[in-house]
Image 1 (cartoon, rainbow, N blue to C red):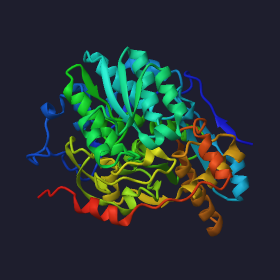
Image 2 (image 1 turned 180 degrees about the vertical axis):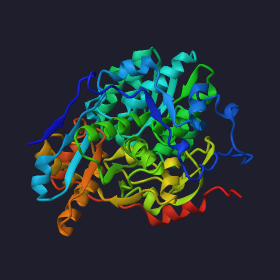
Image 3 (image 1 turned 60 degrees about the horizontal axis):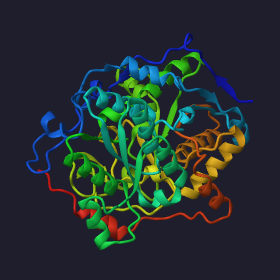
Image 4 (image 1 turned 120 degrees about the horizontal axis):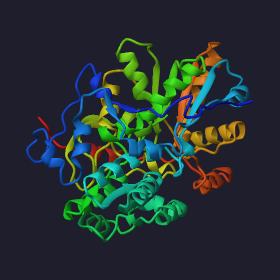
Length: 453
């Protein structure tokens, strides 16, 4: 039987602060650089895209940043999210490990993404912005920002990676239901999009290209800001509401995780569950095994180079130091569209370099196998992205079985797969195949990294 560790708002309150891991880093994060001068960027460089409040969060070294009350009021619709003990999965695996998962799929948009979408919409509205341009991969971020835009009266334009735009029409429909416009990327609406299509009319798209299109639109209009769903420091900051809740919930359950697992594409949901625990460790607390699980077809942490690179394909963004496959790298069109990004969040990359986290990469059939096992045991169908975390957690539990050791495993189930059933149909029919990236294309993309002294 699965234990649901539930709370009313009187028993556990939504955290009042986000946790900023920059305050506890043993070595500061390398600065973000201007692509022309290679000098650290300042607030004025970011002002055309972001409100000042988010720029200040991006560079803050304060340990706690207060969550505005209007944001907490919206959070109350689904937060605190539940923590579950996966007893049926433990039984199916015949493992001595204890497995817990924090379930972010209960949000109205079905994932962890509203944690930052609501915050970003609030800060933009507070700054007088009524229009936001953004990108999305699988559509989790796009639908979340569309929802937040509806809450705060902001028009939202979404550039959705073309392969996911075609694979996931219901995500597109959800964005449009919330009032956003959704365009397949690369598109004819931007200079960067037209340049890609001129060379490759059937290009499947990538998050790097979609980012270029959204940034271009935001930079050209004074009434429009840009919003990013992952990677940036302030985005990861907002997601730490997940880990802050989990620390309290695990304590109330009388347990404490030895292993923490999250899937990684840009790094936001992984940071959300892991950063508060890592911060406690950096302040002298328990040492844990922290695992970032990524797709083998887009393995930035396990195969990428730690270097300065552009965050987008069109080279419109500043340079950040991160694990990257190269800004021109286009991953194959596997179903976990939210993980098809060429780079990893600078903070996550920095923690990898410091040896504070580990990284693993798996192919999609292995991840879907884990997702189906989890669904049959626990009754929740995970999103394709979340299946990577399920795979990582199951492998850890099987390792405990092989070693005869008992560890407590916590993973972040960052979204449901209700709009991803075609992928499960393909998996059941044996049509889902593992896709590998092109080694030659990767070599070319890495060879084109900016030269930064």
